[in-house]
Length: 88
Figure 1: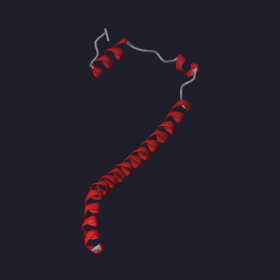
Figure 2: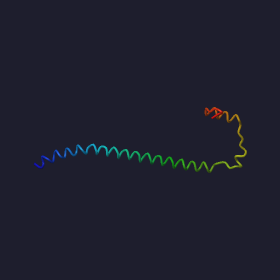
Figure 3: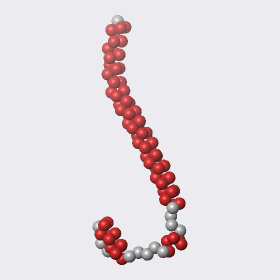
């Protein structure tokens, strides 16, 4: 008698917990994907920080920038290239 009750009870429990197990597995895979994405973004940020630090070190000094002159032709060509009007 006891075994006759246990078998259907186990089946019902398995059926009830089956969907929970599936959702749990889906959630765990989603969490793993998010962790991979965070790691990738952290690597990108570290790379960009290093690159920016190097760029700032190479910035021209005031004496180097004194000799630079701008031509109106250069400005006009840049606006055309970027598709900007004089108002923008």
